[in-house]
Amino acid sequence: MNKENTNFKIGFFGTPEYAVITLLKLKEAGFTISFVVTQPDRPQGRNLLLTPPPAKVWAIENDIPFYQPEKLRDEEFKSKLKKHDCDVFVVIAYGKIIPDDILNIPKAHSLNIHGSLLPKHRGSCPIETAILEDDRVTGVTIIKMDKEMDHGPIVAKKEVIVEPWPPLAEVLGKEIVKAGSDLLISILPDWINGKIKEKEQDDLQATYTKMIKKEDGLIDLEDNPYKNFLKIQAYHGWPSAFFFKEETGKRTRVKITKASYENNTLVIEKVIPEGKKEMDYLS
Image 1 (spheres, rainbow, N blue to C red):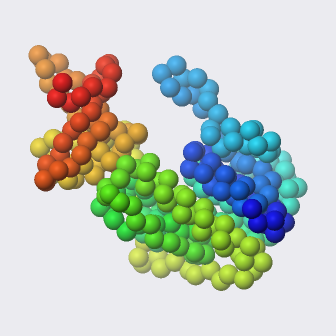
Image 2: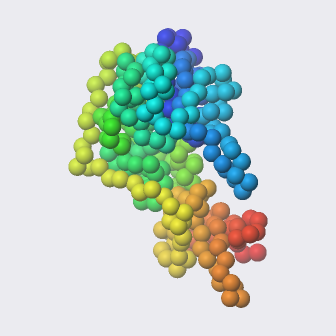
Image 3: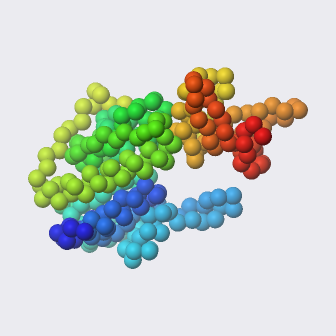
């Protein structure tokens, strides 16, 4: 822990497990986390139980104030954030567009950890997109946030290469978030003290990811085997790659949970047929 970092007060916006990785690293580095803003509790699982997001759970365990606003333009909410008198806001995988009047509250504005080498792969799904496009050299970018999505000037960036390729989306995601968190920690003191000059992105080089939908996981087993393997790895967890199997006049959805790629051949290892438990594909 760097004791000097305790002088810096951070307001944090984030929701999933990726956000918890960054919170842990910031705390271990000695930064003072003044509050956590995260998504409201949502129904999850087959029984639709109301479930708190991981960032909220972490905040409770670490006795840190948290907020779960449905709407960010509430004046009372903004007033609460201002009272914390933060040096900077840090945003990672929050899940909502944050308006300018909130981004500009802190003295050193707001920084976002984005999981690509911007301006490539702007949008909500850079990890999955990197795998789908066989983008073996990807990385993380820290930007000063503005009102447009992933558009703000670049403060720092770092390449991330994961082997063996292609990894599962969550494996690549964790490596990118760890690298991004370490990069953030290394630049935060100088950024807050005005010693870093940001660089505008080249909008002409920008590419954009698309929102992932459940039906995007459908694969054609007759399609290119490597393309199918990339999709299985990218969509592992959610929405999961799947195909339909016809048996005795019945069409069954089969989710692929584990596969490999060997000698230009897709090898499906584990599946979950609709209504059943996970099993070996060839069982």
